[in-house]
Image (cartoon, rainbow, N blue to C red):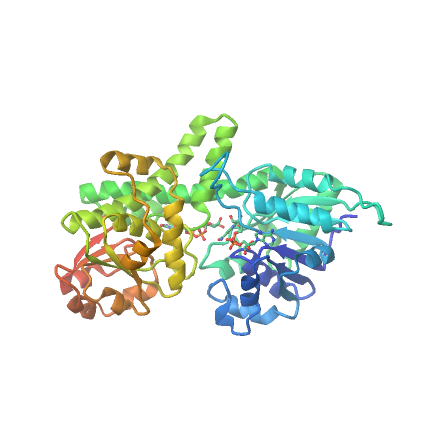
Length: 494
Ligand SMILES: NC(=O)c1ccc[n+]([C@@H]2O[C@H](COP(=O)([O-])OP(=O)(O)OC[C@H]3O[C@@H](n4cnc5c(N)ncnc54)[C@H](O)[C@@H]3O)[C@@H](O)[C@H]2O)c1
Ligand SMILES: O=c1ccn([C@@H]2O[C@H](COP(=O)(O)OP(=O)(O)O[C@H]3O[C@H](CO)[C@@H](O)[C@H](O)[C@H]3O)[C@@H](O)[C@H]2O)c(=O)[nH]1
């Protein structure tokens, strides 16, 4: 029988979602044994490291949460089968990247890791289980998971009847950099399930876990397809706000309006609200682009081309914003950055995370490297090899985009740079001052707080003149920098 209360849960996938989410469940539910499993041995070893600064995910406050429950009721392991066997409830929290091959290449979500999990659970389970989709998935994926589970052959030598499975959708809404805060105090928890008895018992079991710290009115239950689609919709709406304000930043630059003033003015309208209106060099992160492309693919699949085009424009505008920023640097530096030293402050896709997936910095760097810039990078949390890996990966996986296609019309299509060329042109520094010494220009790519408090006079003195600063996050003190003598350009300021 599907349980309506559980004491043993497993999570497949110890990444940015699986790790923090399960750590918080374990912290808030000491009566539940939580096992997080992954095929990546290094990741699991890092989660188990006694030195908490080595946790594979950097999130403010996460070290304390892990310290509180690890080896008490929170365990990290590579024994995927053992964890599946023991658990009454299994979260699937594996990656669902954009497909890089075959049908749906560059658009659809690649569900191969999710499918592998479903097959493994079906192979190993001998008792009834609740399967929870924690990964972000296209609407109706639960149907595919259920089909795989129900097709598992009966075990001829087993005395017990074939196990029953039910699938829940429980998308995660945490944002990186504030994951612990978001998990401790979520706006809502969404649980979608089947309308039959098994589904209702499963919903009750999961809602009971969250009820240990989330107020009842914030635990929303829906039909399963609504829950799956709500996650893609939430990300599409959030990203659309950023693309909307970024679109207007270009108009502000032409007209002399100030995008931050415009954002503040419209954000005070309670119908619009002030959040997610910060104009920037473009949104990054592993989710927004991937999830919108996935939504666009679904709309095309269901023959809704107008709806698909509407959402695709959010991603196109984001490409435009990143490219526009790079072009502004090249134009300002007298139409070439060849051989010039450009310092990057920040590589992560936002502050307070070591995650760099789809970071705007990668694309801006690539554009500048096409023009043979020498790039000197400082980021407080991103390791050197990650930066090289990001640039090398992009060379092989450029997405065929409308904006890039326009670029191709203007000039040659982007060149594929060798690893040697990247390592010759890109330098990663341990201190910000070393990265900026003798630089022709500085570009702020991430909004790390520490960038605001640097000794900007010292930086100016050590730079080549004119000393250009391109603030891709609008975080620097304009008056201070102008008084020192910098040539400062911000986003959306004429
Ligand atoms: N990163 C976020 O902020 C965020 C927030 C909400 C939702 N999501 C969604 O959550 C899902 C996971 O994202 P993430 O950022 O944690 O990804 P991630 O890449 O950091 O982690 C996924 C982990 O799953 C492991 N894995 C893959 N296949 C496996 C298998 N068969 N068995 C065991 N382990 C396996 C990988 O080794 C990896 O460590 C995605 O669908 C994503 O869209 C992410
Ligand atoms: O006003 C804003 C807000 C954000 N950003 C950028 O947008 C990107 C995404 O930021 P954010 O949404 O804060 O971080 P993520 O970790 O990507 O979180 C998003 O994606 C997750 C994965 O699906 C969801 O769970 C979260 O709810 C959703 O906010 C980053 O590059 C930010 O710098 C802006 O440029 N302007």
